[in-house]
Length: 187
Length: 136
Image (cartoon, rainbow over all chains, first blue to last red; front, top):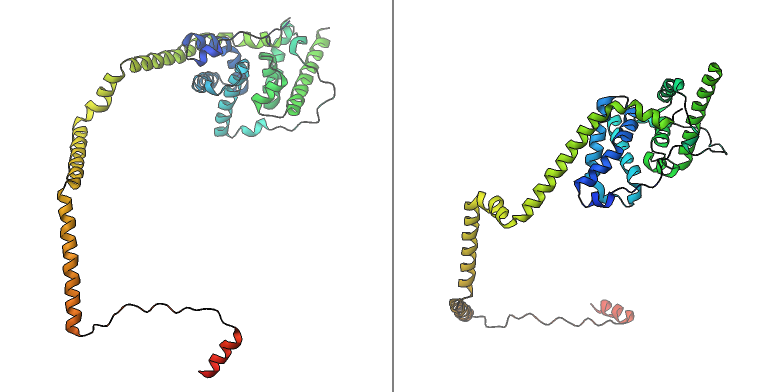
C-alpha cells in the first residue's frame, strides 16, 4: 500500500528560523519527487535539475510567505510549477496547460493505492504517461508521486477543483484501459 | 507489482547524485549567508567604521565642515548684533516718511489722499431704482 500522504513531522518552523540542517532535511525529502514531477513535465534532464535548484533557492527566500506549515510540500511543488511556466512562456508552450475536458463524471475514484503495475507493464505505463496531454500528466504525477489531495492539486496547478477532477479522471481512465489491454494480451 | 510512485521514483533514481550535489550547493550558499550575517552583526561598530566611514573619510570630513559652518552662521544670526540691524532699519523708515512729507509740502498738495470709505450699497425696492434712472 502506498503511504505518502501520512502527516510527516517536517522541520518547517526550524527552516523558517534559518537553520541549515532543517533545510537539508526538507530538501532531501523532496528532491527526488520534485525532480520526477519537473522532469516528466519538461522532458529534459538539465532543465529539471535547474528548476529543482531554482525552486530550492526560491523556497529559502520566500519561506516567510508560507502560512500553513503542513502545506510545505504542495507549496514547494507550486513554486516548481511556476518555474516551469516561466520557462514555457519563453518557449510559448504555456497553452499546452489549457485543456478543455468534458464534464466531470459523477462517480470519482480517489486514492492511488489501488494502482499496482506489473513489471512487464512498467515501460508501457511510462509510455502512456508521456502520451497524455500535459495538463492531465501533471495532475496524474502530483496524484501518484506525492498523493496530494484534489484541493492541493487544484492549488498547485491553479485550476478549479472540477477541472482537476476531470483531468485526473480522464488520465486514470486512459491508464486503466492500457493496463487492461496488456492484461488481456498476457492472458 | 509496483505502485506508479515506485516506478516513477526508480526511473529517476540515477539523478540522485546530481540532486545531492545541487542540494549541497544551495545549502552551502545558505550557510555562507548565515555565517556572514552573524559575523557582520557581531562586529557591527567595526563594520560601520570600515564599510561606511573609512572608505570616504574626506567626504565625511567635508560634510562635517559644512555643518559646522551652518551652525556658526546660525549662531551669529541669533547674536545681539541682530537687534542693531533692526534699529537701523526703523530709523531709515522714519527718515523715509519725513522725506515723503517734505516732498508733499513742496508739491503743494496737502490734501489727504486716503481713499474714500466705500458707499453702503443697501438693497432698495425695484420701484425706487426705476425712478432714479428716470431722473438721471
